[in-house]
Structures are given as C-alpha cells and as structure tokens.
Image (cartoon, rainbow, N blue to C red; front, side):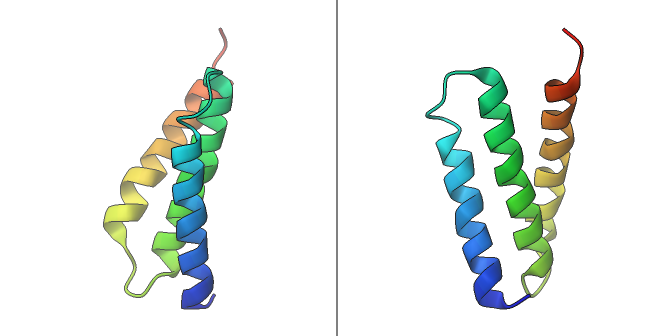
Length: 73
C-alpha cells in the first residue's frame, strides 16, 4: 500500500472517530467508532515505520467495541 493511501485512511479514521461524537444512538456510535479504529490500525500497519502506539490502543478499542456490540442485553 502506498504511503499516500495510508495517509488517506488515517484521515478517514479521524473523520469516523470525530463523527461518532455527533450521533446519539449508542450502537451507532460504537459502530462508527469501530470503523474508525479499524482504519487507524490499517493506517498504523501500513505507515513507515509501523506505528505501534497507534495500532495497540486502537486494536484494543476494536475488541471493546465488538464486545459491547455483540453482548446480550
């Protein structure tokens, strides 16, 4: 993946995370935030050098969002 494409994915991740603050429905917030976190993980992997401080917390946040999206209520 090109560095330019990785940069655009990073910008998209920022848009998703910030966009989640506009929503009121908790499930939608978690879904939008999950997409943003996934984009940040992809951004961190394909950036040179690999950005572990971006990958690790966003990977953990992905798992947390998935847990809350799929837990039984």
